[in-house]
Length: 299
Ligand SMILES: [Zn+2]
Image: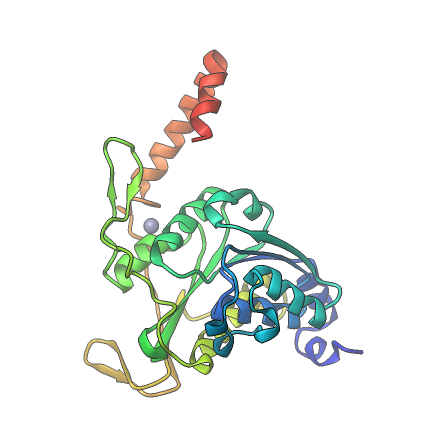
C-alpha cells in the first residue's frame, strides 16, 4: 500500500481526516509549490491552487517543477505534479490574482500564503479575517539566511498586520479618511521577502516547516496534534541575529510569541466594533434600500 509509511505516522483515522481537508495555496513559487506538493504527499485530499504567474527558465533551479513545465501557469504545473503523487487528490486551479478570486477561499480548512510581496499578504490577511480562515505565512530572508513561519488564527492572536508590525517593524498602516480603506503605503514595491537570491535548499527548509505546521493545524483536535510553543518560529540557515545581540547558530530555530495589537487598524477592537456597527447599519439599509447596499458591497 502506497501510503503505509505516512499512515504509520498519522494513523488510519487521521489519514482519513487529512484526505477530507481542503487547503488553499496562494502563490506556487519555490515555497508554495513545495508546500502544496508536500501536503499532497502527506495525504491532504483537496486543494485550491492560485497563481497568475508562469514558470520561466529562471525558476526551474528553485522550483518543484522542472523544465518540462516552462511556459505553464505555476498553479497548473503544480496541480499536475500533485496528480502524479496523489491520484485521489482533488485540485482546483485558479489562474489569476487572489484579489480577484476571493470566492476561491470560501470553504477552505486552511490557507497557505506563499506570495511575493507584503502588499498581497496584507490583502489576503483582510480576506482571511473576513472569512474566519486560519492561514500560515512564511517568509525567506535575504540570501536564504533564514526565514519565519507564523500561524494566524482570525481574532485569536495577531493578524498578519500586527504580527508584521511587531516582528519586522516595517508596516506603517494608516486609514485613508477619504476612502475608509487601509493604506499600507510604507511597505513599497521592494517590500518583499521572497524572490531574493538564495538556494533552493534554504527555501525548502522554511517551506518544510510551513508544511509541518499546516499538517498539525489540519489535525487539530486529533490524537496526533501537538500544541506548538507559540505562534511564530524563526529559522536560521546561517549564523543570524534573530533577537538583537543574540546570534543564532546555523540550523537552529527560535519560537517567539507575537501578541495581537488591540489598536491594530486591521483586527483591533475598534475595527471590530466598526465592522459590527457596519453590519447593523447594513441590516437597516437592507430593509429600506437594498439595491444601494448591494452596489456598495460589490465595490
Ligand atoms: Zn491586527
